[in-house]
Image (cartoon, rainbow, N blue to C red; front, side, top):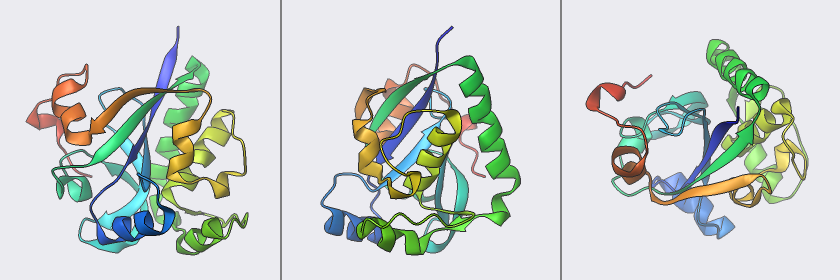
Length: 190
């Protein structure tokens, strides 16, 4: 039986997001992972509090809540990645590990500079959103074309094994177009 994980690349309206977009000239500045097509559980390295960029670490993101709840228009692309049952089980274990040991991890601020300068620099227990997703791919045995520490959100748009299943506004996918029915009880922020 075929299984999937989902990569969500998005452009939020935060000032940091706007600055990154200005320097990179790329349409998206953030990437998250989900184990379900309804995106009820999205995971990434991002800000802990909606209105301040730091502190930041591993977080569960919920559409309509936290930072994602501050903006009505969040352009995104959602990609489906085919995985085996074993890889999907490992994906759940990896997310559980990061959740359990969340306080041992932090945001890799210096990694932003290293990526911009194309310097391969892995820092223990520190990730950018894109480094976290690439690290997870590496742990799952999914094909990567470069070191996980050099990945940017835009790189995930061009993976050979990624199928684009949606391009549009994130809230619209979640509330209107996703094949999963959502109601307000799904919106629980952690």
